[in-house]
Amino acid sequence: MKYVFQQKKSCRADPAARSFPAVPYSVTDFNTPCGIYDYSDRYQVRNCELVGLRDLNQAVPWVRDRMVEFLDKLVEIGVAGFRVDAAKHMWPGDLDVIFDILMRNSSSFDKTENNF
Image (cartoon, rainbow, N blue to C red):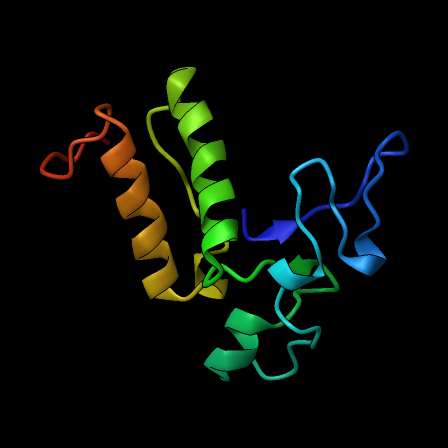
């Protein structure tokens, strides 16, 4: 979820321009390009590009809404949980907002239960 992956040949996406019209994401939905050079620097780890992968700015409400839309669709087809491998690269407050919206939208999740 955190990073946008390489494009398919039939796709109109232009990762270099941060343009993904199918979502749609544009340059305004991404953090300013920078590399991670110091993994002890929280700002770099959470706001810069990991090995050149485009970094979505999850503080932008539009980006959060698209992420929640995607996760909601997965819940609708029966997905019961999510593993967030890139959590280290995400601001905790952004994750809280995304998951709070997801849980509000879905009766499938019960915050009081540990289902796994």
